[in-house]
Image (cartoon, rainbow, N blue to C red; front, side, top):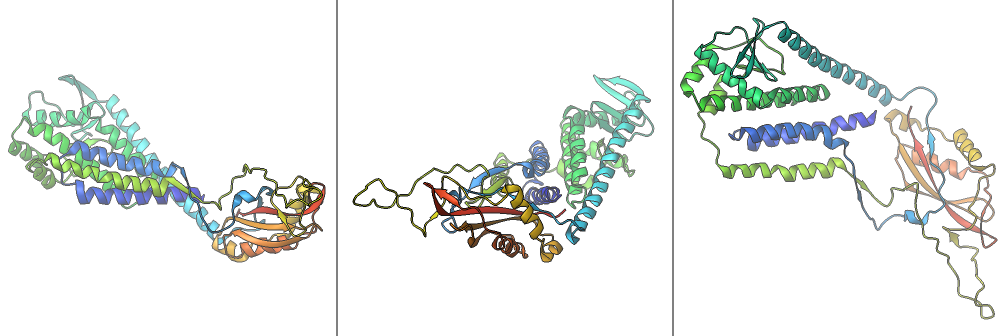
Length: 424
């Protein structure tokens, strides 16, 4: 569950940063194709970057070296049996709320597409310069994939010729696919306050592209007057390109704006460091030497004391020496099943951790002496909220182990134990 919220949080931050960059540096440029690619790429980054994972190894001088711990016990997971934490209840409620919003938005998209296709099938169709014009009084002047949608059609009507030219640009540039992608993103980030701003900006860029196509072959004043005369106030499906859907003032100002110089394309390069930073922050997992692999390869090195004068090959084992690698590792009486049973009966999920919704893995290190007793318990990595103390308390209460052996002699051995605290 927390993975879902991490994904949505990271995606939301990416949307915020990339849209802020767009407004600050790109929105007033007349490179409409580039702006379109940037906006769609921003949505794609928000959807994909939180899913990526690259490992970055970090070394640390402080702390214990995990490579010393050859003998490690399997991770033990503790899950409270009774009730759920307040945080878990809140998470379940949030999941339900998010799922409801997602399904509602997705259902509207699916219903709208089906309805539009249904209207197209039942409507009158005309062929015009290689295009398919669909006529239905329910359609505002708009486009949907390769279809030009009109409420009425009069061959030779000059105003309609301008509309058809405008909508044909939408069709040729596959703007409908953009809008469907926007609606899918909107279903995932329906709660984000900027998702509608993204939608509006992409619609806006589409209109600028289509307006440019028309004004390249027709007078701007005549075309602007047509826009005023065909103002549409009815809200239509958001995956069709409505001819007059957006603020006329902004479109007319953009028609008459001076074209941005090529040097301004350099602004798009400024987005690369920002994107690289987001990849580093959201897609790179920083692992340190305190992050342990369950399949750790440790070189089997033997430690020898200086030989006696009369026997240079006799190995001396110090009674106080603690071994990390031995021939026979310590065992809990009854085996690992008995050890897990001991932990299960004695470990308690701390109330503070449960109330705060704290989860995670505690790594502890301890020594098994030659008499089987447990000593020198140390915390290697903790999660707080009482979990660290609880793990160390139970280890200290452990019965005696069967000690480890080296060269047939009992020796002190260092062990490592991960205990995972997990709420239900």
